[in-house]
Length: 362
View 1: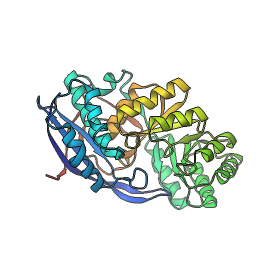
View 2 (view 1 turned 45 degrees about the vertical axis):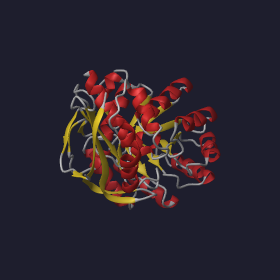
View 3 (view 1 turned 135 degrees about the vertical axis):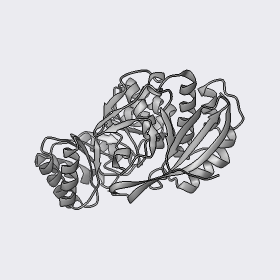
View 4 (view 1 turned 30 degrees about the vertical axis):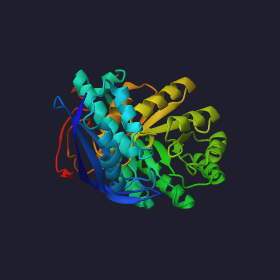
């Protein structure tokens, strides 16, 4: 595998409704696309969203990392296998997890195309279909109830509810959501908004009211592993680590301490599929179930995450609704979304043939 060219481009897609969390608000996706081409003509694609509040990356920093460091480490080199290619990426720059993830998934895409296999088969097989939840952004209770009713009418039966701005208002929001979806599985995501003791009090109150919360995601600050462990030990609701877990080392620390019941793997946090596979290996050893999640991403990087989820049984929960939140899909091929159902074809690699409307940065 010899990489002979690299192109960067911007992918823009409007959201169906504004996306709001305790950390940010946006009305569209604007992500960096990397296209790598090898000497056989195979084109591998990757995607990196700017999520400064979580990964610290902006579009400018992603472009600089890819153009100034990762690209030069790959261009013109012949790699005997993926291990050598992945070492070139990891040796070119530290941090910049989303930029590294985008480059890595483009390499995996090329490698799997050369093998004539879809990525999920290359990573271990499994079924090429799964179901996802859908996110309900934090808003006024009546707006969240309307969004919930829309999601249920579209066939979604698992909802991820953003909370964290105001504890009392959060309770009103969840009452409205539960009223609009009495049979749905409800997960909540506080995006680091609570203190440990506040989290336990709120979760106890939610369960006492019969709101039926399946799990709570990242209730405390990312670096507060002691606080996360406290909530896990005292909460009536199972706890999932998200922003607290970037690397395989983070995952092992959380699992060894039982600082969370579940972990959320995101390719943009961990730096790509290779580290995601390492986290999954640790989860299999410690008997911890995983969720596969995404940032606000389109159907390039989300397709890579779908392939991973289809390949690994340790991933028992799926939160890959980024493309479903968009009002249109500019990506041809890749994962196919139909309500909560996501399906993969047997096309080699990521299965993506083209992307409409890219703004190339040549």
